[in-house]
Image: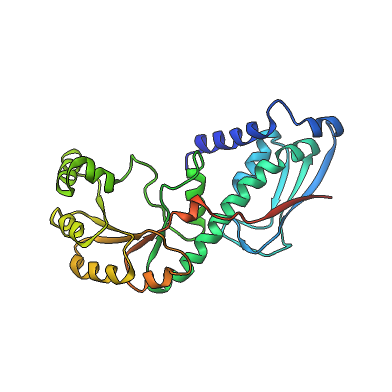
Length: 275
């Protein structure tokens, strides 16, 4: 992982919250006061982001002691203690919300991902994320997907050729788009998003590596699989939820990508309780 990028994310999270100073803490807490606190889960789930949680406090005071009871990927239960913290009281109070926000968001992603993965693994289907991430948090969100048992799709526009509907319209056709992509790169795999069986056949003629079936019904996916017949990996995407996931898994595509894992996931609730 990019440690420099992660540190900047955590620093900016603190800057956003603290601004010119924590006026409440500065007004009532003596600078040399020491306190202890416990990180407690308020609901069941998969914990993710403990390293970032710790680093947020250490950016304010590197002498804060944190003893982790849980590790990333562990199941946490409601009311369970996940970590014990000891150190400068003011630093603990000031970093508290920023650290919890990161932990809660990433744990929510890991928890949601694990629910998708638990269903999909019975059918040997992989669950992947997308680029539908919150601005500035992608590297952390994709980490949380991995902790939940999912896999990462491309990290950005720079590491995978994915020809989508607007690329096709701008290029004039799937054939034009794929030919141009192959002229630029012979090392990257090429994926093409298709919205119907006609586009699918056109993409297959171009010998692409991956076909994304966008907003296909399970019935249409089965039709598409017969046409593809092992000539390309199959990714399925579009409005897939826990409620309909099994219907798509039964079609046994190679990958199901789910934007909701990162763009609209519910946080997993934690609290920091001072003793």
